[in-house]
Image (cartoon, rainbow, N blue to C red; front, side):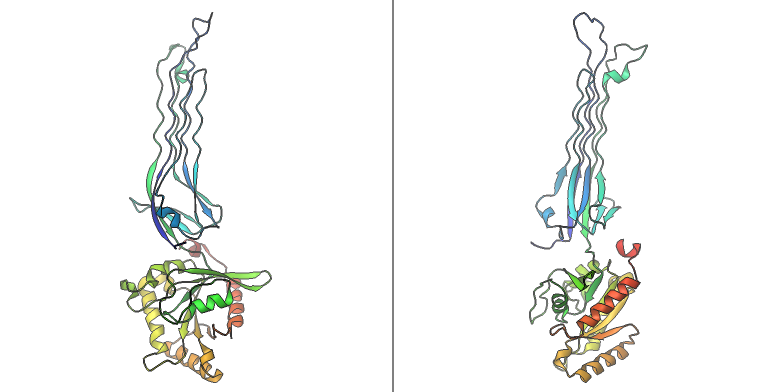
Length: 345
């Protein structure tokens, strides 16, 4: 299934049913009086966060959704049936905005959460409602009101505890496939990751966290180059960022410091809030170096960057250092619980 994280749909709530004019007509009852019933309310349109969905791809094929209208009233004081509400499943993490005004309608961050996006029309009144001591035979009724119609913009922001940042081929996909059951495409050429991937990292019997991998950033991403900038929004809800750096020597043109600065600069251009999130330096591909050389390279890189936060030296390919990293991540998440700003980013 193709990963889609944005969609535009039209929702139409049902109109309210009309009230009617009716009179009781029975033998031997010449003045039966009014008995026109009210109409039924129209159905509303609601969105429901479904944990079984992880893409908005279904909305590529169906873009209009309508709830049924209310039934008209009937004689004998019978009220019309209410139109059933229409419930549309969307992935957890979907942000909903009014496409015409840009107004934020809601943010579905909890499984099963419901959000009403279009109110059904209200029922019309039958003539029995207008009976009074001075108006014994009213011949008036009211129509149901129209249901609300809206154009909506849906934007999916994946919910994850930890996000991976880095240039293409830094080893992000290899890391998430090593520590979780996620199986992203991995190859020895850039841009093998074309959409975000989620993986659940199990550290113990009851301890786990969710990791997100996005396409790698390149220089000029803030100006539209590459794919990574489009998917950076999926890291806005994370509580910790891992900055993955390839420290293995390839040739004279490969400089880990320049790689790190490129990502940091693009991150600052995209969002100051995202750039201020807790971020750890993770030096990858240590298996291609002697242990003491890998540690020295990682320390030199941290010093050159002026890095004051935690740093780790790992090999995503062999798994060296990944368990230590995972345990440290879990401890950080336990001591720094999620807050509202993470959920509503």
